[in-house]
Image (spheres, rainbow, N blue to C red):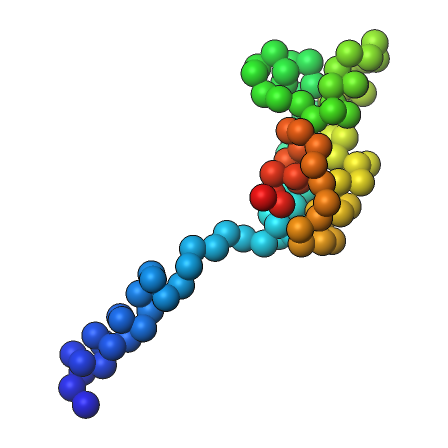
Length: 110
């Protein structure tokens, strides 16, 4: 068989039409996000939820509660997803039943 014919057939077999575009699994995205935030926390404190909101970024319902609560800056700089059930579900289930608005883990499930 001619080399050109072999490569033409290989190109036809691997055309984009034969492989629908897929994203990374939600579990992998969730684990990666958690690892990135953990690495970011090692380099210093996170931006507090009030400053995050003032910068125009939406907060999840739990962060909104913390943002309006009269607590100190260290409390407002915590990574609340680390204690949220949505993170646990997202890291252990594909198509986890998470619907919180502005939750990054819910966004990964879409």
